[in-house]
Length: 184
Image 1: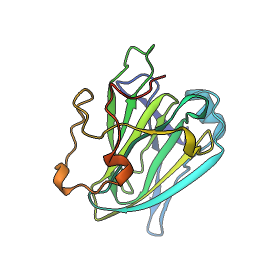
Image 2 (image 1 turned 135 degrees about the vertical axis):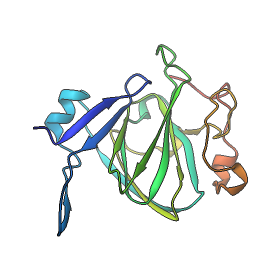
Image 3 (image 1 turned 120 degrees about the vertical axis):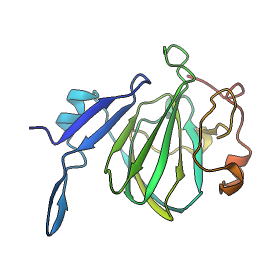
Image 4 (image 1 turned 180 degrees about the horizontal axis):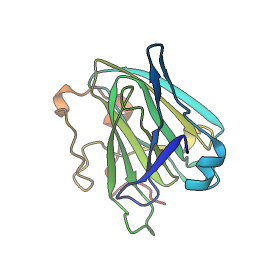
């Protein structure tokens, strides 16, 4: 029996990964990643960097991506707390170009989201605090970083918290529209 269920979403290439969790009176155990199973369901992805952030309720990080040769595929999950995780398809040749996937990831549901290259990514913290971790298949390259506005009307993301309750970085407040953004 596999340690992970791979679930397709409405946006091509984005997958929800649901682990088998073994719980008893001592706590729980689960596999969060197994290269062979991942390659069988997703393809060959070589992760080279792991990142972790801690954020409070209302923090919105995104929608971020790296341009060109520095684009990144990501495998994201929440260790503690809860977020709404969003991936926006920026691949012009994709049948789901401009569409997005929004999935609640939490320490409780233990789901992960795989986001291929060619996507903008962001998340909104729904709990009092969230610890968010992700694997990337390309190193962070600040010169290639880009952001799209979280409230862009072309994308139309339905965030569960009003924008006046959100906390954004100055960089994210200056992000460009979907129309202005560089695409893949």
